[in-house]
Image (tube, rainbow, N blue to C red; front, side, top):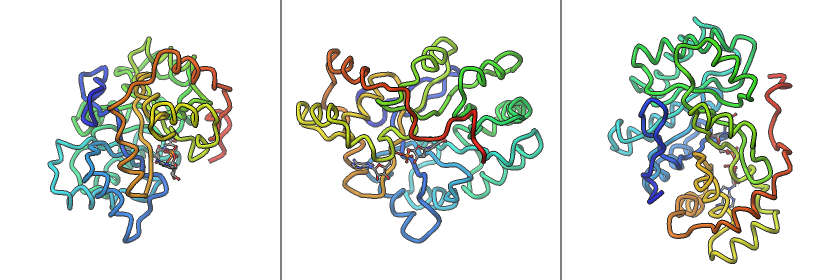
Length: 274
Ligand code: NAD
């Protein structure tokens, strides 16, 4: 884990930068493109979007304006819940590419598990085989959802993007993913702002002379989890990628482990109503 360009290697050999830029709630308005452009300027080469975020056009615009070559950037998007099913998913993917103004994606995910997971997964396999996307995966899948896919898929998911932070460490899911070579990716790595209330994180930030956000993000990397913090503040965008000049000790990793309460801040994938 040397710098912002360091990559996880997915089970098909594709390289995925360990650190990415989250874009949830960065919407389609004039200033939005600046945040993504800023992230690219400071060195992020991995952008996480989704059709439901409504910002794919500005992600595409920012990438184009940055002048960075398409193959130097890792772009993820996701199929939304009302587009599950084989044909609908294939169409949703084309719409996503059109909004992004791109001819392929690096990673396409099923955003949340729903009844039609298997049909939706078949569409992702089709897109992968047709080389429209370099890697395919899921998001918010629990062990039982993964088992459902794994029992008869042709291509196993490469990534599972889930809520993951010191309070919600997903121990069983993480073990299952490791065993099945599915890369875990953290959404909400800063607990959507709530991490700043944890006394131990304050203590460790002081000890390492870093910020709480940096300690939390470094913890993701040291636990082998890809992380995609989001910020629209220029200083924080920079701060969140300045993670490579310190290492959390084994003892402190243990202390953070003990913060786990298994309490989510987001929705439980088994009971979503959207
Ligand atoms: P996050 O944990 O990244 O927290 C973001 C919030 O933390 C920001 O709005 C900001 O207020 C604050 N923040 C960021 N950097 C900070 C800093 N250095 N100091 C102080 N405050 C700071 O939460 P998130 O945006 O929900 O998650 C990250 C990304 O994960 C999203 O942007 C999105 O791309 C993805 N995501 C995916 C799903 C999913 O269902 N797959 C769900 C939520 C988010």
